[in-house]
Image 1 (cartoon, rainbow, N blue to C red):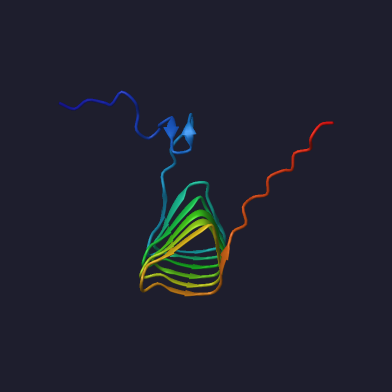
Image 2: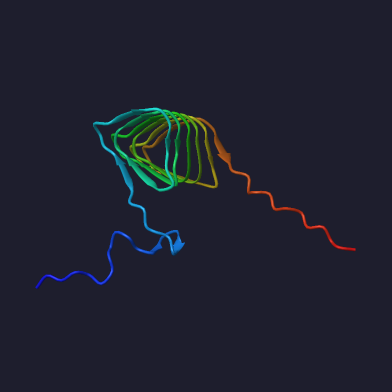
Length: 136
């Protein structure tokens, strides 16, 4: 009736980062938590509480009750709450409940109706490719 799976689900070897890498569970900062200081993670963070400091993560999702007072650097940022500071990310999504006061540097930016954005929208420069020198 109850059987163990052949492979443990918590230690997958084929995670989103490619074969041979373990999946990392998303971190949650709950609504009743305030973090004062910088936050850094190689994984995903769901922020329903508050961070007073800079945030550097792979993917940041700010819930409606979430708040960041500081700079954000990530691959992707989804904002449903409040941000007071600059955002630098490849993809930024501002949902209808979002309030962002600061510049956004991005490759892709999307905003829903109702989102508040006070700042500059700056297009990220693509990484410079090294020049090849022709052999003579």
